[in-house]
Every structure is written in C-alpha cells, then in structure tokens.
Amino acid sequence: MLSVLRNRTYRHLFAAQVVALAGTGLATVALGLLAYDLAGPAAGSVLGTALAIKMVAYVGITPVVAALAHRIPRRRLLVGADLARAAVALGLPFVGSVWQVYLLIFVLQAASATFTPAFRSVIPEVLPEEGDYTRALSLSRLAYDTESLVSPALAAGLLALVGYRWLFWGTVTGFLASALLVVSVALPGGAARAAGASGTAGAQPLPARSLAGIRLFLSVPRLRALLALDLAVAAGGATVIVNTVVHVRDQLGRPASDVPLALGAYGGGSMLVALLLPRVLGRVADRAVMLPAAFAIAGLLAALTAITAAGPVAGGGGWRWPALLALWAGLGAAGSLILTPGGRLLRSAVPPADLPAVFAAQFSLSHGCWLLAYPLAGRLGATAGLPAATAALGTLALAAAALATHTWRTPAHVRARRPLRTSATGPRHRPAAP
Picture 1: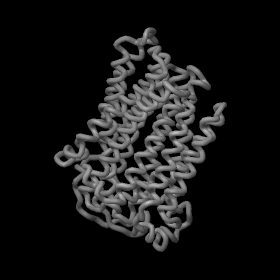
Picture 2 (picture 1 turned 45 degrees about the vertical axis):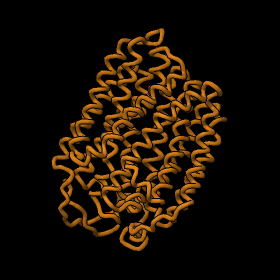
Picture 3 (picture 1 turned 135 degrees about the vertical axis):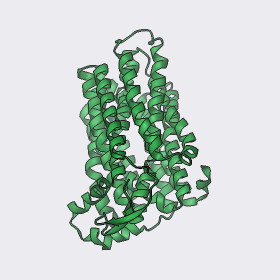
Picture 4 (picture 1 turned 180 degrees about the vertical axis):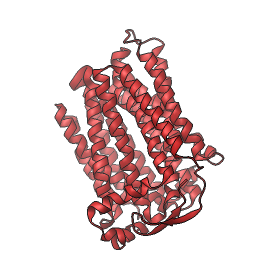
C-alpha cells in the first residue's frame, strides 16, 4: 500500500490530506462540546442542524464549483479553499451563540465543497495505473480512519490541559499546512479541464454544466446503487457524529473526555478494514463487499435501538459503555467497506475526461444523503428520543441496502464498452453500466 508514496506529487497531496484531516478531527470534537455548552441536553439538535447546514453547502455549491472549476488552475483552487477554511476556523473559538455556529459552519463547508471534489479528481491523473489507484484509495481511507482514531485521543489529552475552544486552533494549523503542501507540487493539467473549457460542456450555460455530472452519474446503474449505499453509510455515520455526545454524557453519565474515546472506536473499526481491504479487493468483487456491509449497518443500528430503549443510567453505564464502543467500531468498519471501493466504481464507470464532473456529482449527491440523515438523527433524537431516532435511521439503512441490491445486479468488474450519447463533457464512451 505504501509503495504509492514513492510518487512525489501524490506523497505531498496525501500529506496535505492528513494534516487537514487532523485539524478537522480536533474541530469535530470541539464542535460537539461547544454545542453541549450552548444547548445542554439539546446539543444533538444543535449539532444536527449545524451539520445539515454543512450538507446544504456541499449539495448546493459543489455542482456550481464543478462547472466553473475548469477556469481556475487546480493548485490555485485547492490553496484558495484551504486558506478560506483556515480563516473561518480562526473565528470558531470566539463563538458565543448558536446562530454564529451556523453561519461559520456554512462558510467553512462552502470552502470544503470547493476543495474536496477537486482534490479527489486529481488523484487518478497522478496515479493512472489501476493498482496504484486502488492502493491510494485504501491509503486515503486509512488516513480518514487514523484521523478518527488519533485526533480524538489527541483531543482527550489536550482537554486535560486546556479548554475545548483551544482545539479549534489545531484546525487552523492543519489547513495552513495543507495549503503549503499543495503549493509544493505541480498538478496535472487534466484532459477534463481542457474539454470543459473548449468542448460541449464548456459551451453550455452554467445551469446545464452544473447538472451535467449529476445526469451522467445517475445514468449508470451501479453508480445509482452506490448512491443508495452512501445513504446507508450516512444513516450509521449520523448516529455516531450527531448523538455520540448525548449517548455518552446523558445516556451513560460519563465525562466529556469519553466523547473522543467513543469517536475513536468508530475510527478504529474503519481503520482495521482499511488495512485489510486492499488484499480482499484483489480477490473479491466490490459488490460482494459493499452490499453485505450496508445490511450490517442496519443490523448494528437495530442492536443500538434495543440497548438505548432501556433508558439513561447512572454510574458510567456499566456493560452498556463497552457495548456502545463495540457498536461504534462495527459501524465504522461497515462504513469503510462501502466508502473505500467507491472511487473504483467511479473510475471504471466513465472515461478520464468525465472524472472531475462525476466525482463532484458523487460528492454532492452523497452529501445529500447526509443532509437527510443529520437532521433526522438530531431533531428526532431531541424530540422523540434516541431510541426512536436510532430505529428510524436503522430502517433507512435497511431500505437503502435493499435498493442497492435491487439496482446493482451485475458484478462491477464487467468492463465491456458501449457508446454513451451524452456526458459531462460532450459525446464520450464509457464502460457498460452493470
């Protein structure tokens, strides 16, 4: 897996991803504690709304940015987004009311909606060989997982020394370091950008260009199945991200320092899968890994519903604390089984010229799933209770898994070519859509 780091450009981009993720991880812990500080037991509702605002920025801004991105050099685009995120993060330690949280989250995530799809789409050009790209996907997933494990542990140590608002300064440092690393390498020009500037898509009006990638994405059956699988991941992930602080503090009566430990269990499960998955994907089709993982998410949420239905307990929760950690680790592992191979599906479904548009479409549509799941976890948890919220999200995950199974009928490794009448950048060819 580490052999891809011999590529200098990818090595610097990967390092940029790692340091930005570390800063974001500290902000995730601090934001949950800030929400609890501002709203008490209603923290899940506040955090759910804040994360829903984040998803609105992702869903609404990403297609527009994708349509305009061919006009801006990618290195300049990535660095500008990093600097914008660092500037916004500077204001987070001084937030004193809920509306300020909402405003800063929107601006911060608008910059992330610019950065992330552009970053992901450049990796296939840096690593054109499929084996290298598969290893890069696993290494990227491992970076996310390591962040989920290390950042909460680092946050727990820092919380013993300083207040949680100081954690936001780590976010600023991460984004600035990411910008410096991106500046240090030359990025490929990209055939897709040239086609977008001079081809069919470049001549289209902005609204049409904004939707071209989404139309292309939804025209491929296995990518529609990927969208359903993203919905299952969102159902499990929203349960963890939105309601961990409520489970730990109110349901189990544990201290604030245990919140990052619970989030670390989620990251640890995902990390274990990321370490093992490259070898598995060499022998097993993506479909055989991803579909069972979606049903596993539904089963884990059903188990969490049963445990949570017993109501709050005092004294640390007894056996329910290790049970919560185990469920969080299972949800992380199942999510990684779906998210890691996702880039392989995108790359195999469209020609290289359409990759930026399709990556942007997947980023926007998948975060639309989170836009549904976050408020459901937060609002329903605050009004109807955690058992009702968990049961609703488990039902959503089960329906998504069933839909993906129905849609994705043919193994993903079928690569026969057929003509495609329209694409994000004009008439193209792409692999058959299993």
